[in-house]
Image 1 (cartoon, rainbow, N blue to C red):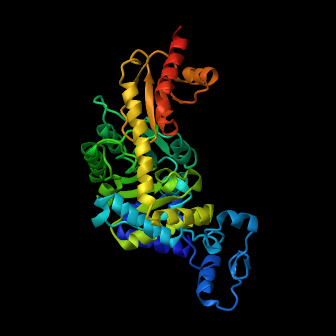
Image 2 (image 1 turned 120 degrees about the horizontal axis):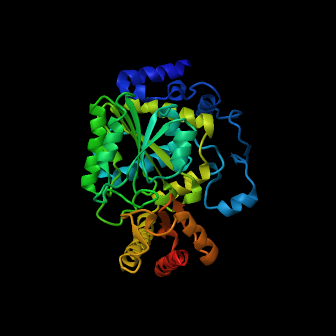
Image 3 (image 1 turned 180 degrees about the vertical axis):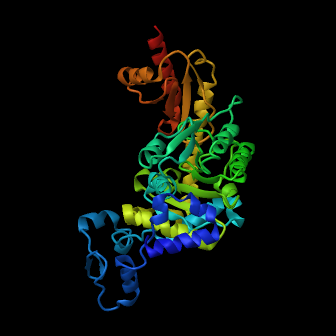
Length: 431
């Protein structure tokens, strides 16, 4: 094993041996090179005042070389903030500003020990990094039965983990914290569980309320107190889009520093929060009991990034940083939030009109981009294709009964017609 990896492992063993035990085989072996091209280039950047012939970019007239046809579309930005490689952990100022935003949005973090966000190539990459570091073949990854299908690829196919599902909702139509607890405690013989919490949930658009949130935290704590090492990732892709009296903070705030056997990881990003899907800017943030532990986890995370994508795109990091620092940012984000909330409220009022009761129920939703219908009389895939072929309407079929509708991409004035046509599709198939 590389000496640097061994040093990081020794730090983790000293600071929290349970976190060391959570690491995958790759997680134990990975490290960020302290010697080599990157470190020598960083040293040269500060000391090579005459000629810097290190990093693999081209320089012209003291600026990163670039094509005018590209710079003409980006002339508001300095070439050094666009064309150079971003550091593997991300643009330092962006990391700092995002951390400040996290604390402002999640006051529960104010007295917690947690690291500096590390930039990922959006949330899928962030989840993939956590999978590489903490999931081995045969490890159990616990997710609800209504989930984003990419989890199967990220944790199951890529890492060989065993996916364990529990029902998202209980009989009262609220979050099934008891099911989560049972799934965690069932891993006592393994001594390890990897839990993914995704709120607002994709595909249902559900976020638990404060009491449910405390029950979720208690379920994870019960696993830790039973001797199970619990890696818990909050997939906060749709963070901030809370339209009712649900939790308005990430559970990361309650989970960070919860117990020595709990490692809380927040994966979030500008993707949906700031409506910049194609920019691919996400973040990975660790909760931990010491700065030494957090530093070791950061080094290992940078090692995974270095070994896969090297570093994230610089231009989009610059664009997001510029937006976050703008005095108009908060007002503009509020404006878009109000539009999204209006669409969600319109969906609820249309569905609660009573005219669709024969065709479907709907799963509780209060946040995010989506909601799900529970069809009563027709197969979801059959309806999906019929709506597409006959009415030019796109929806997502999930299993036999569930049809996901993304109200995020439907103007409020068109929502009633959308559901009327879905209903007409059901009637067509029932003839």
